[in-house]
Amino acid sequence: MSAPRAEELASEFLFQTRHDPYSYVRGAYPWGVEGTMLEKFEGPREWQADELQGLGEHLRSERTRFTPYRSSVASGHGIGKSAMMAWLMEWGIGTFPEARGRITANTETQLRTITWPELHKWHAMNATREFFKLDGTVLRSANPSYHDTWRMDATPWSEHNPDSFHGLHNLGKRIIVLFDEASGISDIIWEVVEGALTDAGTEIIWVVFGNPTNPIGRFYQTHNLHRDVWRHRQIDSRSVPGTNIDQAEQWIKMYGEDSDFVRVRVKGEFPRSGSNQLIPTQDVLDAQADEDIAPNMYDPLIFGLDVARFGQDQSVLMTRKGQVAGIHGTHKWRGLATTELVDAVIPKIIELRPHHIFVDGGGVGGGVVDLLRHRGFDVIEINFGSKPSNPDYANKRAEMWVRMRDWLAKGASIPWHDVDLFADLTNQTYLFQEGRTNALQLTSKADMARDGLPSPDTADALALTFAHQVAPVVHPSERTVRSSATAETDYDEGWR
Picture 1 (spheres, one colour):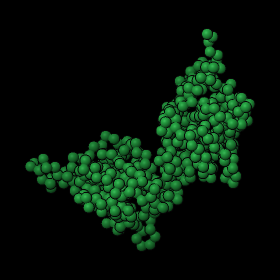
Picture 2 (cartoon, one colour):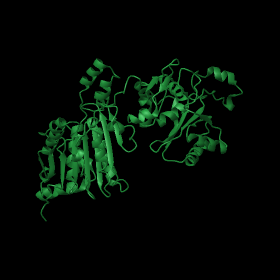
Picture 3 (tube, one colour):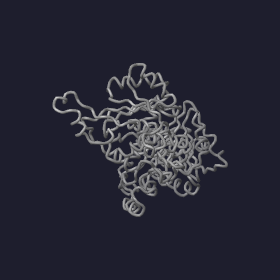
Picture 4 (cartoon, rainbow, N blue to C red):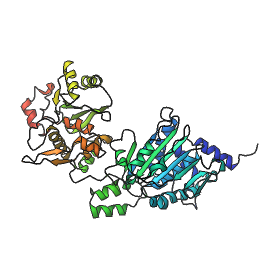
């Protein structure tokens, strides 16, 4: 039997990697081969490998394969976004018969001078390039019979004429959509693409990249309001090998570590909408990093339960013991009726036996309070809009948030992996009421929603644990050797 031809091997490789983009990228390009552009590179960068593997896992699962795959990457400069888009285009079109796709960018200039030339560079190195033809702004099958049905198009957009993004349907096959510099792409284009994600039995892949230049809009929402349906990550360019660290350090010296310029161009973080951010980002980052903090033995265990009111919101139970939030986990539920939420919370109360339980009693939360009390649980109802104990604040919610802010500033620990909590804490802004009181008031949830921000449910649950100052715990085993007064004296003053 004769040895298989190179064409047959390449065809088999494309078939085998149709649901394995990472193996495709590893095998299609000449990593480490002397005399090529990749001779000094062993393979994709860590973040690229993680993205490719995550997409592969989504496609290999019978449960998720035909649900839209959405991924959003916000980053600083130079991490390899353009290369990643070139790989996704070649893999996405190359490994599925009659796949169709579109790629666009914030401007036509970006698309034609940066995004598409990057594809040309990688296509020239692709071991399977003979199967596909790259000309003008189209990557398509080399077989003329499939020129119109098996292709990837670079398509400029216009918010006044979004029709170029209609017709993305490809029932029973594969659709791939890529956005480059997604912060600058009009919301209407996002909406048109969203309408194409309805084909049943179809592999639908939508991946967006960009520097996070705009704190409003659909790209911002993929990391906030719509974060529950998007795989999202923010990448500091300094964490990626091969980036220009010296340039990043120069920017930091020029503009400051927490300037919006450095946040966007280096850290891959969205700029603040203004200078009225309630909780400094660095305090939140420090709290995420302080994993070694342990609670004092006299710290009471406190529960804060924020009750959801709308379909996009979630009910959150936060546990806190002294300087450690989430010590017994952060529990989140979406779409539960009040009775269902109570049934979900009660086992946590019985298991963990908290010393204090503060429950958001506004709106439907009042029903949760009543049901918990009816079943014999001692809970304290907190109304966010009620009168604060300190007239410097407009209401109870503002007072609790400032207490939480001060707690963070003194050295606290919060779960490092909770992206919802990080976003909630850093998104909240404030203003001062006009008039004689000049009281501090938090930006309302309605105003935040209009700016594309989610309801800060997770942070509200943590803030509830600061509703009232509480006494330290006196352990029965120690009552013979120390009085409660001694314990109070030895216990660190401040918010328990």
